[in-house]
Length: 365
Ligand SMILES: *[C@@H]1O[C@H](CO)[C@@H](O)[C@H](O)[C@H]1NC(C)=O
Ligand SMILES: *[C@@H]1O[C@H](CO)[C@@H](O)[C@H](O)[C@H]1NC(C)=O
Ligand SMILES: *[C@@H]1O[C@H](CO)[C@@H](O)[C@H](O)[C@H]1NC(C)=O
Image (cartoon, rainbow, N blue to C red; front, side, top):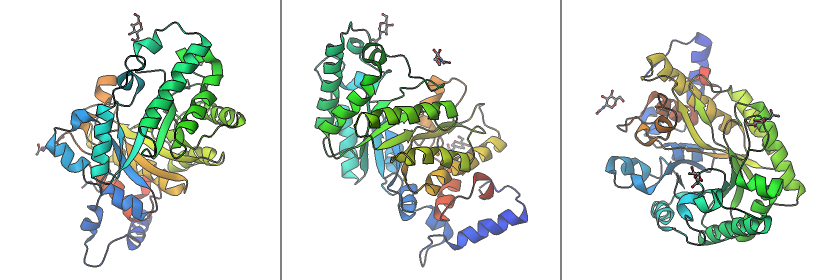
């Protein structure tokens, strides 16, 4: 356990926080911290602490021991298998087997199922990305995809990421086949098809860098207002929260950004949380900073009542998407590649257990 030297005032604050710890009679502090992140988060009034997972991880027993512990992770989202390319590779031919297996494992373990993602410019099948589309034909293909996939999982997804990553970092709408052929209409069209297909699923817009780039958050506010002005339902914003060590905004700033969307009548979630080191191997100081940054992110969600929960984008460095996408970066998860808990894990458990994470800097790790 890394324990930085803290000024006395901070130590007083840390021990004051421990007084409100959810330690049960006969339970030590360590046992309280070992009860699992989902259990701790639920005790704090949140719906879930979850993880991305997919079928290619299922034959790893060490991984599965943690993934199937519902006290640790109370929600699954399929990392890849529900995306348009994998689930409808050929027009009208659907492959539900993999995401069905993820859902079955969630059901077996009494875990919530979050669903991801319907209209997205990336990981598209060739027939969509490289098709020659007229407006009516693309509307039909989009509506049909959303309707068939959502109907397959009807009433069984807590939420759907209906539109994913539609914005550039400067807040303008990103170029895609959908924007080129349908203009901004593809946004309300997608949400309207989703609302009709499954009235019980929360309908989300999901994107990255909303946490760190105000112009992009401005763009997301415009996007929400555009959908609402069309009289179409949107329920939530997924802040992907793919953050970097040392590049995580303060808890107050992050909470303020989440609250911009709460003010529009929406719930929010950190939907794909991981915090990557920019340089590997990470120094001891960077490992400590990562723990503080995780506490900052989790604390921001705790401080916003309409932040319903957090999902990490894999819980172990063994299966993180980051090294292959951003070579040289990584070690972004709460567990090492060999499944030991990092200081970030312990710091997050401690901050949830203490009933709040004042800010990353105030929590002993
Ligand atoms: C679309 O076509 C281009 C050029 O042939 C190719 O590089 C790309 O992979 C195709 N996209 C998809 C999603 O198949
Ligand atoms: C916003 O970013 C996109 C993508 O990088 C770029 O094509 C576009 O020109 C930018 N627009 C403005 C107004 O800066
Ligand atoms: C697990 O990995 C860490 C570094 O990631 C290493 O220090 C430790 O020795 C490993 N433990 C085992 C049991 O392999």
